[in-house]
Image (cartoon, rainbow, N blue to C red; front, side, top):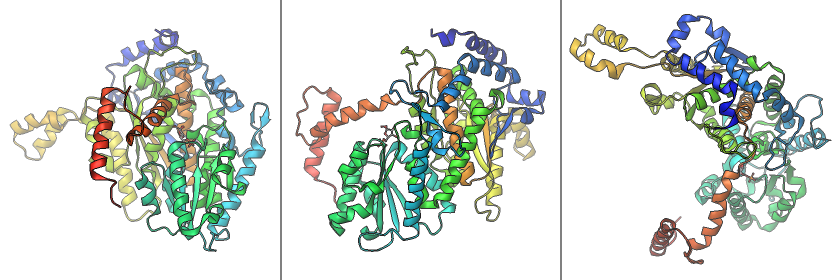
Amino acid sequence: MSTLTKSPAWQALERHRDRLATTTLRQLFADENDRFERFSLRAGPLLLDCSKNWMTAETLDLLVSLARQQQLPSWIERLFSGYHVNHTEGRAALHMALRNRSERPMSVDGKDVMPAVRDVLGRMRRFSAGVREGRLRGATGKAFRTVVNIGIGGSDLGPCMVCEALRAYAADAPDVRFVSNVDDSHLMEALRGASPEETLFIVSSKTFTTQETMANAESARQWLTGALGNDAVGLHFAAVSTNVPGTTAFGISPDRVFEFWDWVGGRYSLWSAIGLPVAMAVGMDRFEELLAGAHAMDEHFRTTSLHANAPVMLGLLDVWYADFHGCGTRAVLPYSQYLHRLPAYLQQLDMESNGKQIDREGNRVDHPTGAIVWGEPGTNGQHAFFQLLHQGTQIVPCDFIVAAVGAHESGRHHEMLLANCLAQTQALAFGKSGDEAQDEMLAAGMPAERASFLSPYRSFPGNRPSTTILLERLDPYALGALIALYEHRVFVQSVLWNINAFDQWGVELGKQLAGNLLPRISGRDADEGLDGSTAGLLHAIRKIRSSRGPASR
Ligand code: F6P
């Protein structure tokens, strides 16, 4: 057993969990009709209703004791002070500096990073305005109508999710498209209908070595130079990277390279020049509103007491469900079509950060860490997987995210969205008993025997926890706050588990093995030394490919 699971705070929570085992949300609401007042929080532009969680005041006190035992306040301080929280890579994780709207300096290794951050923001503003206003043009003098971001993981998911989320703000903007997959269909489809003369590429890669991104960038360059010649590259390519020599070697002119720094993790890089596609789509003013919303959440996280701190509350609940109730997954359910890429974005943020099994001292943990995060927008999910949420055998804590005011307010659509969102949280929490189901069927005129038979099928166990995050509206400011809320929540989990949220060694083995297998796909290298399954698959692949030839376009 690790020191964590043996610790007094952990064991007190185990005993508390056992005492609460038979208490349902129905019971908790019957006992405390002020639960909403007691367990809802305001954080910047967000309201969090945590009252439909398995939690009493004592639960919260005990979770906060665990947080104190794990020295959460001092870890928050270290995070903001530029301490090397990422100890396996010897780096700080100071993404908050990228959105620091205050005059306070923020330092890494004794150096204030704010002047460099402001300089890059200024360059992003000038470049994005030049493109949007048609002053910066392509090799034949035409304005850019299409901007294609080439990147993967953190160099794709954040800007792509935000561009989708803020589509309502993107009128009269270039069409911003995203290419991530090394599957060339992705690039081909992104370039469908685009004219080389009017297309600007942004190659986004922290390392500028990522195989997929480099392959897509090379193919994009061929597509461009095939139509406009080699000299066009300088005007049609920009790059965002920490690897300036790499961007130069690719042929991107230095005034089109937007730098960021190794103290920004890939999945935390949206706020850096990686956000350039967002500035292209909605303008730099909106991008800075996004930064301001995130900064408001940083201030809340840094200065609010643990009991009233929104990211702390969510991180504590995550640990409560994952470690004390065996909930291996968590659903994110945005009631907003514009947020349809949010679950994918949060998958990287949460699972790449906390999908770890070795603690900060190098010991294997003996308790669950990062949960599987998944989801889809409501109301679509209701007609797909919500069945399992309501009547399945697994408990899946859910985040419902909804704006009080819709982006368009056309007709009754937004009211319907809101009603559905709240109804789902009610149904999950309070369910419908067998008797209630039977009474309803009898009242509708069903014969008693049939009603009795159907009642187990038509009853809902309830007592399924959820948190509702209410935005006033989905604007850049609220979106920034929402994303930063999740970032800090992930950090809180990691502190409680004593793991490093900022490395990602688990992605390396696959990259290494793909490098070994690439020459074997064509048969250039022999299969010897391979396991039987992989060798068998390679053999079958080569056979099919040699009999069919490449797919026709
Ligand atoms: O392979 C994982 C990863 O390193 C992510 O952490 C990162 O966001 C992504 O690849 C892309 O990396 P880069 O921005 O260096 O191309």
